[in-house]
Length: 85
Image (cartoon, rainbow, N blue to C red; front, side, top):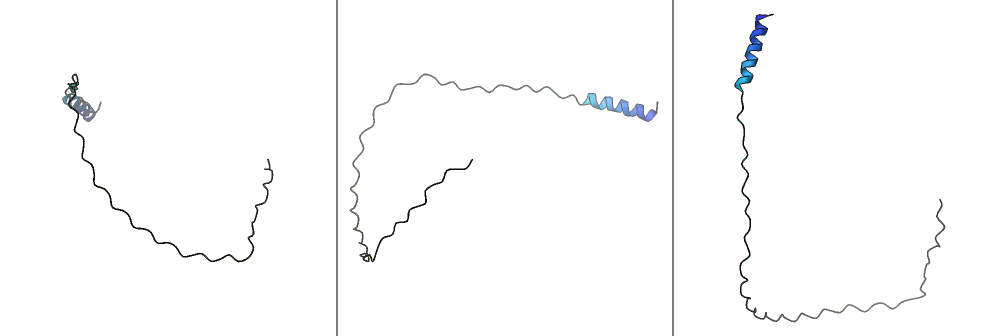
C-alpha cells in the first residue's frame, strides 16, 4: 500500500474524531397560564350630548330641457335562436 495513502487515511480518521460536536439540549419555554378572572368593575358614566350640526346649503337647479321634436322609435332586439349542439 502506498505510504501517502496510509498517511491520508490516518489523517482523515484523526480529523473526524476531533470534530466531536457537543449535544444541544433544548430547554422548553415556560408558558404563562392565566389565573381566574377578578371581580367585575363598576359601570362607566353616561357621556355628554354632542353638538348639533349645521344646516347644509341648497343645491342649484339645472337648466330646463329642450322640447322633443318628432316621433320616438323603439328598436327591438332579434329573437334568440336555439343553441346548436
